Amino acid sequence: MEDLYSFERELIEKGITLIGGIDEVGRGPLVGAVVASCVILPLNYKLDGLTDSKKLSEKKREKFYDILLHDAISIGIGIIDEKTIDKVNIYEATKLAMIDAVKNMKIKPDYILIDAMKLDIDIPSTSIIKGDAKSLSIAAASVIAKVTRDRMMIELDKKYPMYDFKHNKGYPTKKHLEAINKYGVIDEHRRSYSPVYEYLERIENERKVNKITK
Image (cartoon, rainbow, N blue to C red; front, side, top):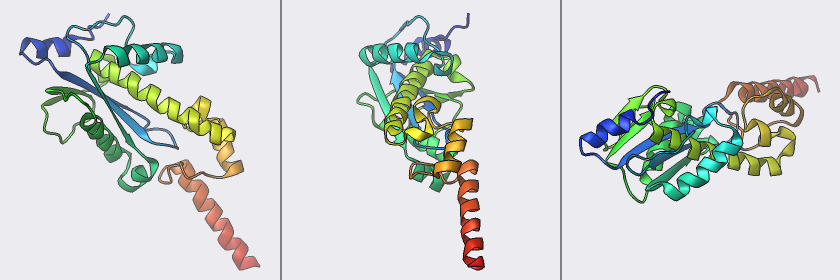
């Protein structure tokens, strides 16, 4: 079993104690915001079963979310909406969400461990590929970000039940794509993403053809 505390332990041995783990959720969906979280765990923290949120069931994520809210020294969340994603692209929006997550912390970290990304931030950091499966702090951030975004999508599902956001969380499932073709796009859809862009382009072309033929 992989040691999920090796990166943190190495920093603690150097005298660094406020270690923040950063992760994001929501790069792939066609709708809604990208959400990032930064979490500082207590020193030598243990939570059996905590790992990358993608490997956990929804029930376990919800359970760990509540535990982490109680146990963490500090938690910050950054949310960048679909309009900004369309404007700056998802990669840049992800970085903005991560930076906002740090800014929104009551207690700031002295060092941050980041899942894959590199940030332009005035805090020393290490980027770890697949960090959510290698660092407990990043895994904690992945759970906080995932549950936060999923709850946003469940709320959006109440407004637009035909898109099945409650289950697909905005990802391009068959049912979601069929709903776009049947009902069109909503304000929260990301216009820069291919399925949405292609639908809008097709509708615009059909409108032009109809205008010419009338």
